[in-house]
Length: 93
Image 1 (cartoon, rainbow, N blue to C red):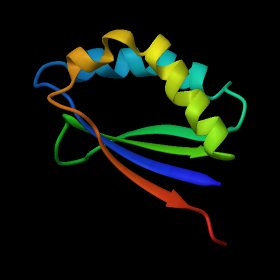
Image 2 (cartoon, helix red, strand yellow; image 1 turned 30 degrees about the horizontal axis):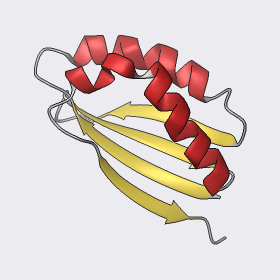
Image 3 (cartoon, one colour; image 1 turned 120 degrees about the horizontal axis):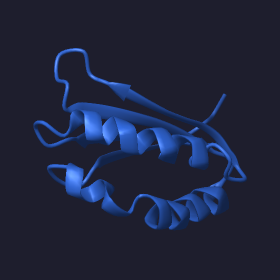
Image 4 (cartoon, rainbow, N blue to C red; image 1 turned 180 degrees about the horizontal axis):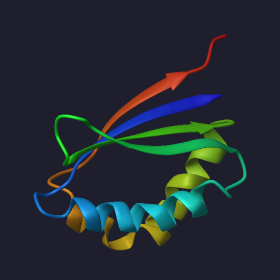
């Protein structure tokens, strides 16, 4: 099992637009084969900071997700201040 923690800083004033866009994306990602979790969290002290918790069965499922996200997440990048910070984990227990 692969786990990813993605941190995204959204441009000031674009937080609600980001949440609206992510509602559709989350629903679609959760239907991907090999996806076990996809949840979006907003920081308590920084309304523009979001964390996405993701789990995939294997590298093949993650690769398919990345391809799919390019198709469905088109304008999402315009809402961000920069590229996401990604942390990769492998489940051991």
